[in-house]
Length: 148
Image (cartoon, rainbow, N blue to C red; front, side, top):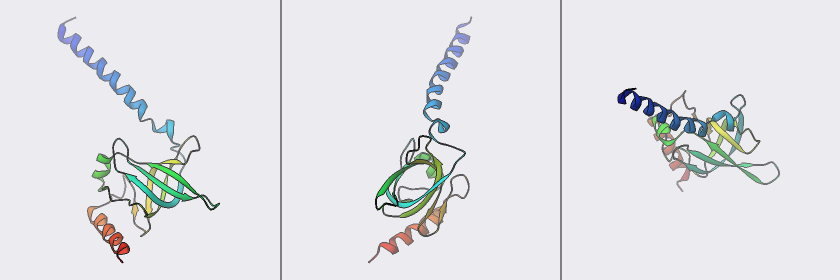
């Protein structure tokens, strides 16, 4: 075997070995039920605009006078930026209705499919892009609502 062939084969093996753990780490089907959808209605507690996945913590009334915290996982920050998202897209205290794929273990967790804000605007990844114009309009509405 020539040295060039050996190096090419070794490089391919190394690349395959590093990709397999990454694929296992991001196994959607292991964590979420892609055939089911659930909807929660609550208040944003925190929006973590980060990589590898952004997360929204939503406080949802449990129907018994308490609150249950749901974790909503979303695409990563870099991907969300391509859709027009910013760190201010979802603000603490904002009322939201979020639909997503539920966690497989029955925990209060889902993977994002759609959000409807309190002002009625919708965000759907891969479909209706959150335009920069729409985001600016939303931020102005939020500021007006917060003004004394």
